[in-house]
Structure formats: structure tokens, C-alpha cells
Length: 185
Ligand code: IMP
Ligand code: MG
Image (cartoon, rainbow, N blue to C red; front, side):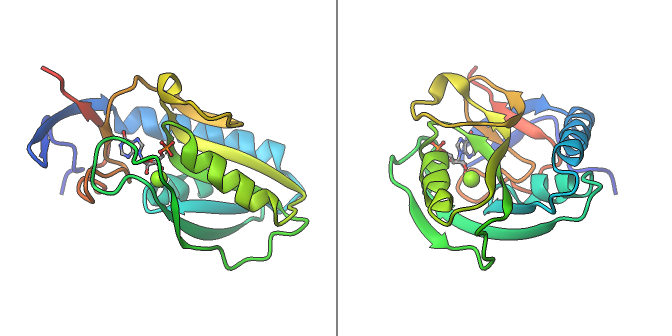
């Protein structure tokens, strides 16, 4: 079967068009993996994925990291089913690992307002990791209102809703193999 990359996607009555191709994603993820491999050599980092959105990015990224490392997950909810941030973050699942004195790499799908990232880094810092770094596949720079430190960014994108490669719209669209953007026309 071919990859799931339709030319047009209709999700919850809205139309999306292709925005970041599979090959562009693959190339950028490989670059990030190489950089992380260099930067964390000898430090046995623990990658913490933010569920649900980051699961596909994290699984591709970790396989490009060529040093011993670990993984854990946490889960947040901030968007509900809407296309704009609700302005509230709730924690739905915490990590299991003890991260005190560990080198932690937080992996997100997208930073929009930055509220989730701010909430997460504040929460993880309280557990006194040796270091805390942040990787996000996508960053909507214009929309970011909170002061967040992003150490590794895959792509800076415009302030429009995106879908696919783990990202959803009301829980749909995560299985699309490339990233789509809202078609405003
Ligand atoms: P923030 O707290 O406003 O930065 O929003 C971050 C979270 O909202 C991300 O982890 C995503 O789960 C979700 N999100 C933000 N923008 C989009 C988008 O364009 N498509 C899908 N999910 C998004
Ligand atoms: Mg998310």
C-alpha cells in the first residue's frame, strides 16, 4: 500500500492541503537526531514525549539518535476539540521515571502559544534534572506568547492550524504521513 498522503484532506468539515512532505520531515528529523547524538554523547538522555501529538515524531527521532538513551511519556490536554488553545492546561498522565540528576529531553509536536511548554518545563524543573532541553517539531512563532526556551526546532511555521504526522484535529488525522495546513481559500 502507498503512504497515506492524499492531496486534499477534509477533517471536521474543513479542508487541508499538503504543507510539509514526508521527505522534508525525514530529512529534518535525521538532522535533529544527528545533532542530539552529538550533544548528548556520554550522557544517557531520557526522552520525554508529550502525548498524544508527539508519538510519531518521537518514534522517528529516537531511531536517529545513535547513543544509549531512554524514553518515557506524559500526557496533557489543552486544546480539547477546538482549533484554538483553550488557555488551560491539565495533566492527564505523569511520567513514571525518576528524572532527578538526569539529562531530560522533552519532545513536543508543536509549540503554539507556549502555554503547554511553559507548564511542562516548570513542572519538570521542580524534579531537579541535571539538564532540561526541549525539542519541538513545529513552532508557530507568531502565536507564542509565553517565554519558552526551545533548544531544537524542526520547522518554524505560520500561525495556521496544521494536521498529520501525529497532530490531530478533534482526534482525527494523526495517521496522515505528512503535515497538512488549513486551506483558507
Ligand atoms: P500551546 O499550549 O498553545 O503552545 O499548544 C500546544 C499544544 O496544542 C500542542 O502540543 C498541540 O497538541 C496543540 N496544537 C497547537 N497547534 C496545533 C495545530 O496547529 N494542530 C494540532 N494541534 C495543535
Ligand atoms: Mg501536544
